[in-house]
Length: 276
DNA sequence: CTTATCCCCTGCCGGC
DNA sequence: TGCCGGCAGGGGATAA
Image (cartoon, rainbow, N blue to C red):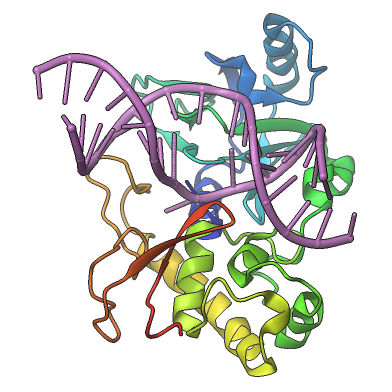
């Protein structure tokens, strides 16, 4: 259930392992992962086409745009990946792996593997020159980490919205990369109630938000950088977040019991005192 | 244009 | 123990 920090960590790790590596074979146990072909194309034809386009291709560069991963190839195509709720994309040593949806064998014996128990993740194959026109990417607002938005831009954009500020922050057209946990944790650090309509926030609140967003994202990347990337709900996962999934526990700042609300259909954790 | 609802999937957890 | 509803770090399509 990755958001910007987890996707950024994934991108950095792939950037250290992939550029220069060449694909020697493709294994696709779950062809539904692959997008970009005609929707009614038979899976075996899709896999055959991907195999013929990717075999022999070398990775040229690694990027991230909001929660999308961009894996540029030297063939003029780019693989665009989205991990959705449970996806992981990683380079593994040449040992047997199971339960993956996709694996690309590389010329040094390692493998690029897409693991995704809920099978909501997606992988597109897009001509690199058409990348900017891909609707999923064209919709995105400025990246929440790479281009921290000035408070003035956020305030101007949010001024007419009746959306609760938490839902507003998660809307990828405003800022790219924030998800359910990031939005809730950022609002805690900024001391703002998540259900207040964006349009009702005073200027000073937007200033606090603009500062809290990059600060929180940098912390979240650092906090999860070491070790294997784990998502909450996985066995042995450790919860690094201040409020998230801690209903009833004391607020780390003031000790008031943390409460769980539902905003725009998503579980939201809040300190009723710090975020009054 | 906005906002809300449903849907895509599977695994885990707590309650009975 | 076993079953079952609720829930999940995303986002697109559709409806009002």
